[in-house]
Amino acid sequence: MPGALLKHAAIPCNQFATQPKKAMFESAALEKFFKFPLYITRQFLALTEMGIQHPEEIEKFSVYTVGNTDILQVAYNRKKGSILPVTRRYKFPQLKESVMADSGTRKTEVLYKSTPAFREALHELEQLKLALEQGKDLKARLREEMRLLKEDMALRTEYIESIIDQL
Image 1 (tube, rainbow, N blue to C red):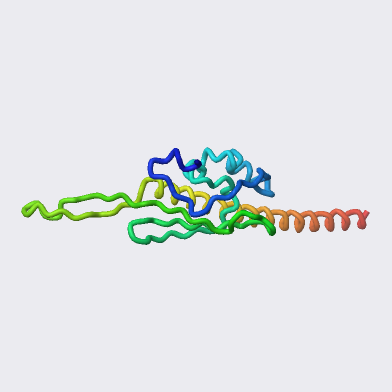
Image 2: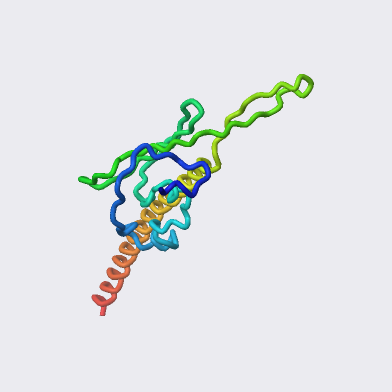
């Protein structure tokens, strides 16, 4: 079971077969940015333990709490015709903690905290979101550089042609 390594593992609401490995990104620059292919996911260990094998397909995620359970809902950008689910929910039971509210009367209150596995998964999803946004920014910057280079080459070509015409 993928979540067996976590002490307080996520409980997937649905289990489906995994899809075959594929190229992570169209851009080689993004491949270098991540340093390893994402399906190896040394970088996203908590997501791997939750059973997420292709984090690059994550489109968005949301977090909410029902009762004493934190729920992480992940939406994927799947290819048309894929049998894999578009969204999956992972449930993380909250940890119960008793704290002293009043030391004079020894009154205690019960607090519920998120599990470390839940916090780590959120942290990794935020890292992934930031990395993908930076990748989109990189693509835009490269396109702008190409446009400026083409403009510069056109001006230089025009200048050289005018010198040739003067000769």
